[in-house]
Amino acid sequence: MASRTRTTAPGQAEPTGALRRRAAALLAGPLRRAGTAASALALAAVPLLGSSPPSAAADPPELHDGFGLTQTAPATGTDTNFVITVTTPEVAGEHRIRILLPEGYADAPDRRYPVLYFLHGASDDPGNPALAYPALTAARSMITVIPDGGRRGWYADWRDQDTAAGAQRWETFHIEQVLPFVDANLRTVRERGRRAVAGISMGGFGALHYAQRHPGLFGHVATFSGANELSRNHAVIRAAVVATLTNVGAPLCGGSSWPTCGYDFGPAVSSDALFGSPYPVLGADRLWNEADPIARMDRLADTGIAVYAGDGRGDPGEMEFWVASAAQHTKERLDALGIPLHYVAYGDGTGWGEHCDGGHNSGCWAQDLVDYVPRLEAEFAAG
Image (tube, rainbow, N blue to C red; front, side, top):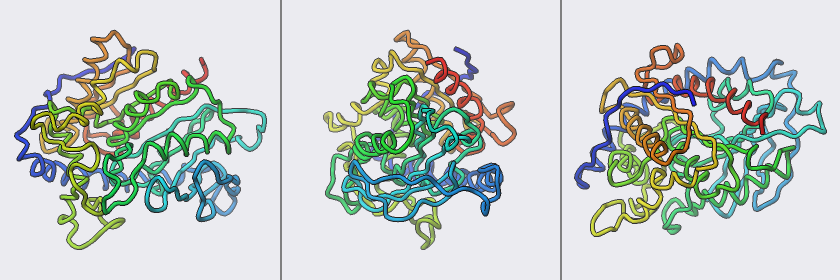
């Protein structure tokens, strides 16, 4: 498999008392830069979302409720790029799902398509048009589904369901509801080898988590700047997860809240809400270690794998600096197991798209997808 590599610093464990302070510092800069890049990309991508002006675009196809999902509003968008809003008992609140259909979908009623489930990062929502990256909307032979993962849902069924956030069974929502809902409403190919899961940042963890826990469902997995490592040996990423749960960044909003401020992750919950205690005292963090994707890479032995990351320009205050070491550890573990992967370490972004600076932002993720989507479509075509 092709790869571009650059040496990165390994993640370093920190005293548990420093987790929240480190997380708050790390979240501030990267989220500000990511939000700016996402806004710029959204403006650039809007003209590419359809070949016809909005007034001439066809309406979204009609989808039928089922599998525990109830649509609460008419679909918005075009016939190839639209958003539905649903409720489910599994997760509190309303949830948007963006669906991207290839051009010509409506004109080929006998054709079925493979599916990419694309998982967004923290502090985002499928209602954000920037998530319809140009490389995804340009795909001609697959369907892309971008389900809501919450501002900090972490693509898991939380251990504690009795918090201020309400029901948080994200894995159940996606695997047992969204996936069969899509198969029932759209012309999908319902085979493992024609179904992929990929994600950015928080969604990168989610993609690995789902591919490892449901190997019979996904034949391909990709992580873009993903939170690939949750073990006690990579305490910084664990701290960033804890920061989203406890919402330590909210004071940075200066009185603003979602959707105005990207630092606000919703009502604060206990650091134990997701996987129990994150603190490695007498093995209290057992569930975090069990959820660590690197510890379960052997489950991907028969799966197409792609891993992408920059290096944050060598700045420890940039989240991508730490993500880079998690990506490197992912590669090392897969190499040790003899499992092939497509690995791209693009360093400071030089030569990796004009909008990529090696940071934790949409400019780099857009270029990741330019590289990944044609590869995935080729894999799908090869069966």
